[in-house]
Image (tube, rainbow, N blue to C red; front, side, top):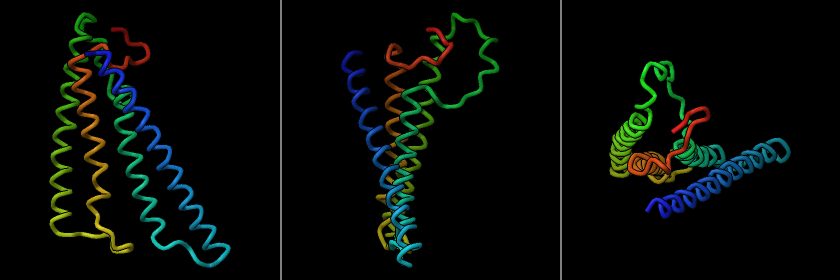
Length: 167
Protein backbone atom coordinates (compact mmCIF):
# COMPACT_ATOMS: atom_id res chain seq x y z
CA UNK A 1 0.00 0.00 0.00
CA UNK A 2 2.76 2.42 0.95
CA UNK A 3 4.71 1.70 -2.24
CA UNK A 4 1.65 2.39 -4.40
CA UNK A 5 0.89 5.61 -2.51
CA UNK A 6 4.54 6.69 -2.87
CA UNK A 7 4.40 6.05 -6.62
CA UNK A 8 1.14 7.98 -6.99
CA UNK A 9 2.52 10.90 -4.98
CA UNK A 10 5.64 10.85 -7.15
CA UNK A 11 3.55 11.06 -10.33
CA UNK A 12 1.39 13.77 -8.81
CA UNK A 13 4.47 15.79 -7.87
CA UNK A 14 5.93 15.49 -11.39
CA UNK A 15 2.62 16.53 -12.94
CA UNK A 16 2.31 19.50 -10.59
CA UNK A 17 5.86 20.63 -11.34
CA UNK A 18 5.17 20.37 -15.07
CA UNK A 19 1.98 22.44 -14.77
CA UNK A 20 3.70 25.04 -12.56
CA UNK A 21 6.61 25.40 -15.01
CA UNK A 22 4.25 25.62 -18.01
CA UNK A 23 2.05 28.15 -16.17
CA UNK A 24 5.01 30.37 -15.34
CA UNK A 25 6.33 30.06 -18.90
CA UNK A 26 2.92 30.93 -20.37
CA UNK A 27 2.53 33.84 -17.98
CA UNK A 28 6.00 35.17 -18.79
CA UNK A 29 5.61 34.79 -22.55
CA UNK A 30 2.17 36.39 -22.50
CA UNK A 31 3.34 39.40 -20.49
CA UNK A 32 6.50 39.70 -22.56
CA UNK A 33 4.51 39.63 -25.80
CA UNK A 34 2.13 42.23 -24.38
CA UNK A 35 4.97 44.58 -23.38
CA UNK A 36 6.78 44.11 -26.70
CA UNK A 37 3.52 44.72 -28.55
CA UNK A 38 2.84 47.91 -26.64
CA UNK A 39 6.39 49.24 -26.81
CA UNK A 40 7.23 48.36 -30.41
CA UNK A 41 3.89 48.18 -32.21
CA UNK A 42 1.88 50.51 -29.92
CA UNK A 43 -0.69 47.75 -29.47
CA UNK A 44 -0.69 45.24 -26.64
CA UNK A 45 -2.53 41.96 -26.28
CA UNK A 46 -6.10 42.40 -25.08
CA UNK A 47 -6.60 40.87 -21.61
CA UNK A 48 -2.99 39.69 -21.32
CA UNK A 49 -2.57 40.76 -17.70
CA UNK A 50 -5.85 39.12 -16.65
CA UNK A 51 -4.96 35.81 -18.30
CA UNK A 52 -1.41 36.01 -16.91
CA UNK A 53 -2.91 36.44 -13.44
CA UNK A 54 -4.88 33.21 -13.93
CA UNK A 55 -1.68 31.37 -14.83
CA UNK A 56 -0.10 32.79 -11.68
CA UNK A 57 -3.01 31.59 -9.52
CA UNK A 58 -2.73 28.09 -10.99
CA UNK A 59 1.02 27.98 -10.38
CA UNK A 60 0.68 29.36 -6.85
CA UNK A 61 -1.96 26.88 -5.75
CA UNK A 62 -0.11 23.87 -7.14
CA UNK A 63 3.04 25.21 -5.51
CA UNK A 64 1.15 25.17 -2.21
CA UNK A 65 0.69 21.41 -2.57
CA UNK A 66 4.33 21.01 -3.68
CA UNK A 67 5.38 22.77 -0.46
CA UNK A 68 3.25 20.30 1.48
CA UNK A 69 5.01 17.46 -0.32
CA UNK A 70 8.40 18.81 0.72
CA UNK A 71 7.43 19.89 4.24
CA UNK A 72 8.51 23.37 3.21
CA UNK A 73 5.73 25.38 4.85
CA UNK A 74 6.88 27.94 7.37
CA UNK A 75 6.06 26.97 10.92
CA UNK A 76 7.24 28.13 14.32
CA UNK A 77 9.81 25.76 15.82
CA UNK A 78 10.57 27.64 19.03
CA UNK A 79 8.74 25.09 21.21
CA UNK A 80 10.04 21.96 19.48
CA UNK A 81 12.89 21.52 21.97
CA UNK A 82 10.52 21.71 24.94
CA UNK A 83 8.78 18.43 24.09
CA UNK A 84 10.32 14.99 24.59
CA UNK A 85 12.00 13.59 21.48
CA UNK A 86 10.01 10.36 21.89
CA UNK A 87 6.83 12.30 21.07
CA UNK A 88 8.15 13.60 17.75
CA UNK A 89 6.67 10.91 15.49
CA UNK A 90 3.25 11.12 17.13
CA UNK A 91 3.26 14.91 17.06
CA UNK A 92 4.18 14.90 13.37
CA UNK A 93 1.15 12.66 12.73
CA UNK A 94 -1.07 15.00 14.73
CA UNK A 95 0.38 17.90 12.75
CA UNK A 96 -0.54 16.20 9.48
CA UNK A 97 -4.08 15.53 10.71
CA UNK A 98 -4.42 19.18 11.74
CA UNK A 99 -2.94 20.29 8.40
CA UNK A 100 -5.48 18.11 6.58
CA UNK A 101 -8.32 19.48 8.70
CA UNK A 102 -7.33 23.09 7.98
CA UNK A 103 -6.96 22.36 4.25
CA UNK A 104 -10.38 20.65 4.20
CA UNK A 105 -12.05 23.62 5.93
CA UNK A 106 -10.49 25.98 3.37
CA UNK A 107 -11.49 23.57 0.58
CA UNK A 108 -15.14 23.72 1.67
CA UNK A 109 -14.95 27.53 1.79
CA UNK A 110 -13.41 27.54 -1.69
CA UNK A 111 -16.19 25.38 -3.12
CA UNK A 112 -18.83 27.64 -1.57
CA UNK A 113 -17.08 30.67 -3.00
CA UNK A 114 -16.85 29.04 -6.44
CA UNK A 115 -20.51 27.96 -6.29
CA UNK A 116 -21.64 31.51 -5.48
CA UNK A 117 -19.50 32.97 -8.24
CA UNK A 118 -20.98 30.47 -10.68
CA UNK A 119 -24.54 31.00 -9.41
CA UNK A 120 -24.30 34.76 -9.90
CA UNK A 121 -22.59 34.25 -13.28
CA UNK A 122 -19.77 36.62 -12.36
CA UNK A 123 -17.31 37.39 -15.14
CA UNK A 124 -14.02 39.18 -15.49
CA UNK A 125 -15.05 42.66 -16.66
CA UNK A 126 -12.05 42.97 -18.98
CA UNK A 127 -12.12 39.71 -20.90
CA UNK A 128 -15.73 38.75 -20.11
CA UNK A 129 -14.92 35.16 -19.18
CA UNK A 130 -16.63 33.45 -16.23
CA UNK A 131 -14.61 33.74 -13.02
CA UNK A 132 -15.44 30.38 -11.46
CA UNK A 133 -13.13 28.24 -13.66
CA UNK A 134 -10.27 30.52 -12.68
CA UNK A 135 -11.08 29.96 -9.00
CA UNK A 136 -11.01 26.16 -9.23
CA UNK A 137 -7.21 26.01 -8.69
CA UNK A 138 -7.81 27.31 -5.17
CA UNK A 139 -9.89 24.24 -4.36
CA UNK A 140 -7.50 21.91 -6.20
CA UNK A 141 -4.47 23.18 -4.29
CA UNK A 142 -6.09 22.84 -0.88
CA UNK A 143 -7.72 19.53 -1.79
CA UNK A 144 -4.44 17.96 -2.91
CA UNK A 145 -2.72 19.31 0.19
CA UNK A 146 -5.40 17.71 2.39
CA UNK A 147 -4.93 14.37 0.61
CA UNK A 148 -1.17 14.56 1.10
CA UNK A 149 -1.51 15.39 4.79
CA UNK A 150 -3.96 12.50 5.30
CA UNK A 151 -1.61 10.08 3.52
CA UNK A 152 1.33 11.31 5.62
CA UNK A 153 -0.71 10.84 8.81
CA UNK A 154 -1.80 7.33 7.80
CA UNK A 155 1.54 6.28 6.30
CA UNK A 156 4.27 8.23 8.14
CA UNK A 157 6.98 6.62 6.02
CA UNK A 158 5.76 8.72 3.08
CA UNK A 159 6.06 12.01 4.92
CA UNK A 160 9.00 14.21 3.99
CA UNK A 161 11.55 14.80 6.72
CA UNK A 162 12.76 18.31 7.44
CA UNK A 163 16.46 18.90 7.30
CA UNK A 164 17.85 18.28 10.75
CA UNK A 165 14.76 16.34 11.87
CA UNK A 166 15.01 12.64 12.52
CA UNK A 167 12.14 10.17 12.59
